[in-house]
Figure 1 (cartoon, rainbow, N blue to C red):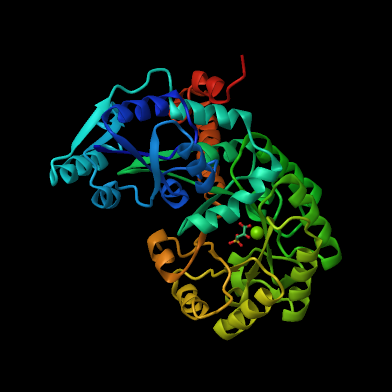
Figure 2: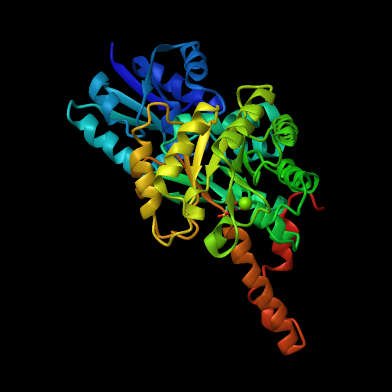
Length: 432
Ligand code: SPV
Ligand code: MG
């Protein structure tokens, strides 16, 4: 009996998959390589179903002899193991991001005289259309809240961008680029206190109250499905913080980050130019513990943000705080810096990597923006937040347009910088 290999992620099963398996059956015994959760997360969004669920579905399809995990995007390791006589695939991968994967399949099969059999891609099925339909259906708080922990388990680096209203939420949700063999996108949203306040024309001093912050959060929740991390500033009094935790958890927010400062909160990027006072380790640890006790599920994360570098208190202080906050139950640590280089962040990482009880590590590279995700990942960082870039890029564009109209006393000159009326009418579906 000949051996036939078919690889699939099998997340959204449709008749195209059955076609491929049926064609494969005609050629011999069918071995299906099901892509692992890590592999799927590495080249597109999180799978909807986890590996055991997807494996169970494929195992129960008629004609499948065996299911094995495929733990690389590349087929080669599994092909070398199974040495199939045939690989069967739809003919849609000759162009585009999978074309190199295909090339390597052909080259590898050649080693033992195997053959690639391509069948006509099933018409009328488009994974991107199915994805779009799923986006329109939306998500539930229970599903959304879990996504951040899942991402942290599956991806070496989780990438988050700020959103301060529904429109910026949609930009984070939908912006994608195709590169080599993968589709790159953001994993979720950061609702920054700086950007939320700035968008409301207010300073970043906790003057925008929690109810108003919830308004922004709701606008983003309504039109997106990706996980959301909230900038909780200092978290307020521990007695108040527990209510914030419950409200956010109920909405399906995945995490809150609170910073260990007291008094009138000033944005960290002011550094020591303004008065910034650290909370005592004991008080802040108690606030974390109170929050952890208040939450109802295991899914919600409380991430402790250490401001030692911001106030000039140094590495030893930062490490002491990291130990205490983890002991108090923090699900993650954010280490912040306003330096132009990542030097002090890397100093922290070096010591943090020695912790036996380390939790995911978060950074916000605003001032040290030349650092790459790769460098951060190698230093041991698990999650990177681009904290303010959408509002910072939108504001100059809008001021420029306003100035242009004043200057020319008409709108013609700024038209070139604007999206067309047709584009804006069609940007958000459902308008007509
Ligand atoms: C924010 O985005 O509001 C933050 C990060 O808290 S920072 O502005 O760097 O303090
Ligand atoms: Mg903030």
